[in-house]
Length: 336
Image 1: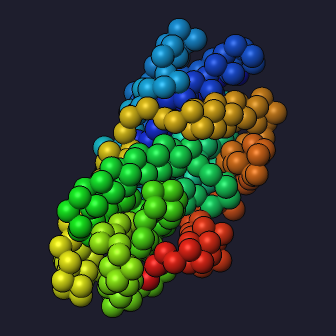
Image 2 (image 1 turned 180 degrees about the vertical axis):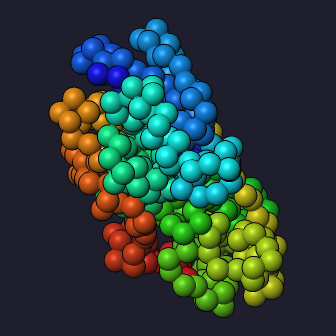
């Protein structure tokens, strides 16, 4: 059997570990031939591929980024590297010409949606969920999330000393346009006093009162963790907006920090390395069994899979009844 593998969308810690898991299982256990597709779906349009051997997988487990490269190419939308042809038809033609029996797609929500469309067109597809945002529906955790939370938590830990020394409010902005998982988990792990998520509405006066109440209790500094996708005035970044509003409401000196792409780079945590390895190996098992059109998923402690058609177009969001939100409120943390 001859399989192709691609990585699409944003980079993320653990992609290379997943590639390694897929390919080592395919080559060493099932005797499959593996073709690496460069730059996501763009590589399927241009036939930019390479043969992958066991030797070429050395050193990948702890390496950040993706050895195959990635892109935001969307085959079912106009534009991109090829704009004057029917891109889905060209990809189907290229898959046939390259004699690929299956394509493994590693990516986030957009990739899962594209993979589902190709599966509906008859392409043998198996996908693996990848995102630091942890917002892919159908899997308890996506690889990359634990690494991003670890990076954000470390940054929050470091801000405590500065905030304490200067008796300031420190606002730290983490990634999460629609889903606040990183803000929730890093905010709780890092001892945030206010945690703002896109899914939960907030009142700036309530936030100000929370900070002033802390001051009355002899706590002269506060840590505010915000997801980048929270509601603002539309003109400023989340951290800048919240910092200015807090300073106006409280009169306390407030500073902001934006972590940005730091959360997506570098070596994956041990948890993500193991999760990536397990998911990659399970993807190859699905191929060997002929179970196509499915996305690998973590369910509890087990690796399973679900139909791609159930995943496409859905988001997994934080809810008010999540354990960490409930426990945080019991402890006096302000969520808005």
